[in-house]
Length: 195
Image (cartoon, rainbow, N blue to C red; front, side, top):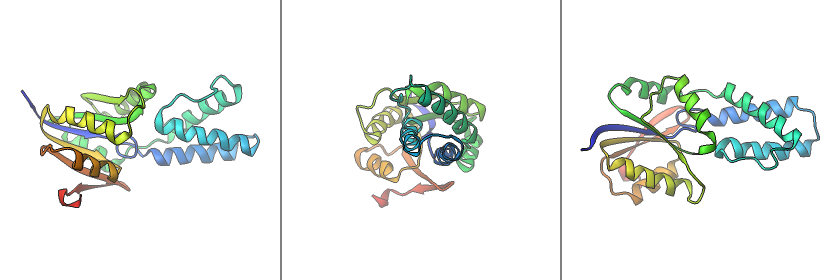
């Protein structure tokens, strides 16, 4: 038997403002970590990838990189803020819906992701993270979204990437999914005629 209602939300730049946290982290390291500019820029480039994709860093055993990664993650975690409009909407509905967080973050970041969700009172039914990187973000998310749509009468999807929404709408024939684009702290219903 199908359940009635689910909200499916992306994590990065949807539930939480991750781009701002990444920017704060990089600025702090540039200003406060004394090393060669080339070395810092290499590490910052890797940090952007690690924080956004959850991939294990190369050469993590090197002392310099290990220290800077730990510092960066501490700063990142402290400056990561919730996206207030999305959070408020979900919290207002949480008693009557199943919240499913669908993120292209890898399993490497499960513990940290769960901690953040729990810290803000987001009682989620399921946290779906990427098991490996064999598919693109939109392909993998579409596969997971279809599985979810089969089990619910109504699904509201919150996503910050318009190209993903367009792809989902084009590739899926599920009429029980409503799409919401999250941009600059605003939630906008995404209309079917915009394909």
